[in-house]
Amino acid sequence: MFSGGSTIIEAPNQPGWTILKKREREEKSGAEKRRVDQEKMGWRWVEAVLPLGIIAGMLCIAGNVQYAIHTKAHGRPKHIGNDMWDVAMERRDKNLLSSSSSS
Image (cartoon, rainbow, N blue to C red; front, top):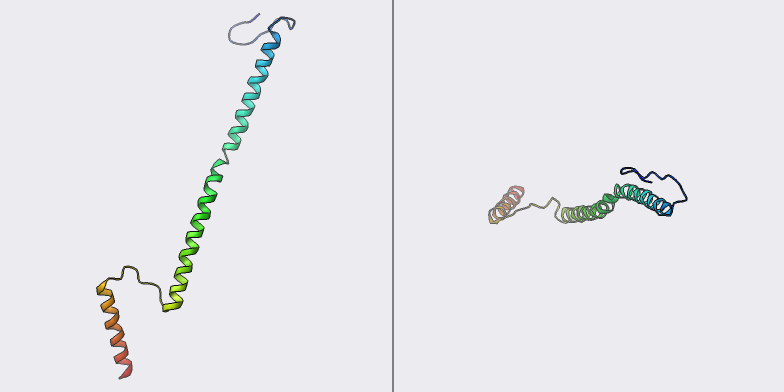
């Protein structure tokens, strides 16, 4: 018969013996499935990070292309945050440089 929580079978010719063996096989296969699933889950984060890396790379490429185009067109990097004072100072500097080069 059975003892405690473990499955001890006295004789294989008992009627419930095949049912118990099937349960043991199912439990083992379930444990193996869980182990295999855990191994697959170890690399699941790569599936999430890969598209994020592609998106970040494309954003970097787009920013660098804009920087290169602006630098080639204007000869210097773009001044970020230009307000009216900066524009007035650029005009003043341009006038001073043109007047000093003509003298």
